[in-house]
Image (cartoon, rainbow, N blue to C red):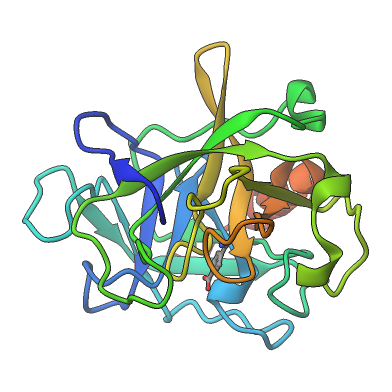
Length: 246
Ligand code: 4AZ
């Protein structure tokens, strides 16, 4: 996160760090817990090869706020299953969504999925979270989980120059601040863009893509979770019906 601040002092139990299986503190991507066992992340965190779902690629840690100290709030899970959106082909916001099933249920509090209010997010302010780069090109990731508030722009304001796809596009949100300098960055991918409705945190977007970090006129691109509600719910339903490998 560029232009953010420490989130120390408040709890974000749904924030999930995706990391190498044997190394729980090196950030690769993030994700967000949506129920006791499922984490939503970006498809491009796994691979660009369509249909490839590598359950061995990541460990998933919840309750991590300062990755440089040993925290008792933390717990690391293995990945039992991964569903990558079948339409995903490139990391540009289109269909950049995947569902991770943890190897066991957790009692960390999940975030809420979007409701009807999230159908139109234009001009809403949301918060992005992550352990990604705090300056573009500087890969020294921060110890503390960073958070920053950004504004969700109208789809028409998303620059076509940073998107090979058509703009406006209902599958993406673009968000940033007018003067630049506040943005998600390398290493934040898959993490939440969260908004608050009636005191409840809601997963509005997934960090997906951008032209650099914090550049004026180039807002970050986020997967619009509202658009994928049916896909998420159907896949979780199917999994519950078919049962899980132990
Ligand atoms: C990345 O490389 C990345 N400013 C993620 C988000 C943004 C840029 C880069 C958005 O993972």
